[in-house]
Length: 443
Image 1 (cartoon, rainbow, N blue to C red):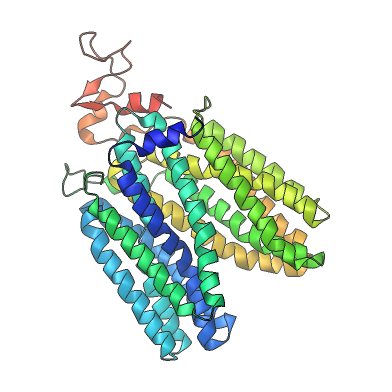
Image 2: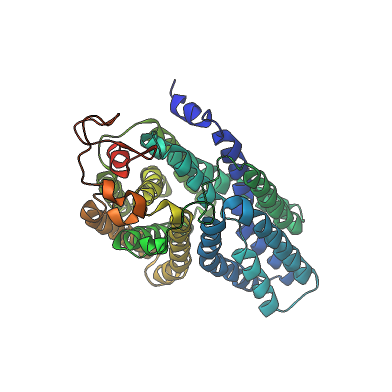
């Protein structure tokens, strides 16, 4: 059956119990930003104020997410998540109250920032649980697990904004914001209740002083650069597609065209996760980013909404492999004690790129028309291809310094023939765990 790999993953003891609540809560997270826009606009009557509050939310989330993830890595998901969810619920209540009280734009922006700073990073926590669950013995299934995460995220951002917009259209914008917070809190609490699948925290496991330094390396900066570029691509694409169809007198075509991109991405992500690829992740990264670059160059040549729909179907299908490869490469690069932080920093980089792209592509469209916006997407894709080429060397092998000190000595040594599980000196069991070198070779 085509879905056998996904079913096998979800049948892993404890997997469905954390994945489903995280997916449920992620719908609420996907609703939050747009819900704030509708909420503020309904009371102020201006999108300028709504954009300001939403911008405060986005900046606070980008800066606060890695700090929350750092607490999670240090003290554990089950300890940090419940109080973080309480803080998020209180922040949403404060924002709704201030909107009802007709507070000033400055106070509303502060309220939006409080909501953004407390958004639960359920995606990063779920991905960290997959890594902990499959790291020993089943590392080759991690790409499929991360593909499942990517599909969950895509569905959340397809369903969430649609749901909150439908509620706003009925004249109840507060309901969208409250529902978003409710879904996030309920999903997060159910996730926190699954203690058995939670990764070990620094206070529970052996101390690894200086593990944070594994985030300050070229590999992570490269991955952050890739996420920044893909954020620019996303931000510029939405604005540019809208501008193109308006130029061609078919403004109603924007939603179907963007839906085509979403659907092609969902299908491609599903198929990508079903296959075990022979090429290494860095090679796949280079190929996917190059195809994306070629697709964005085609955007500069389209002459009708129909042609645009065909091209965005191609670019949309190229995105899911990239969104899977980023966490795969991150998991093989950083120490497991800071994995949630690493995932959060990548997400923050993508959010920053998307926010910057909205302003840059708007200026380019005003100056050069819709093709100016597509030029921004092509530039972002070219930057990704260049970084993918650099990644062939930089992301080639796992780094010894990212391993726990008690296991660093394993790499490079040939185990004695008598050691059970050792084959040609390439694989050994150390302290009941598979060596990091052997785990990497499973790719």
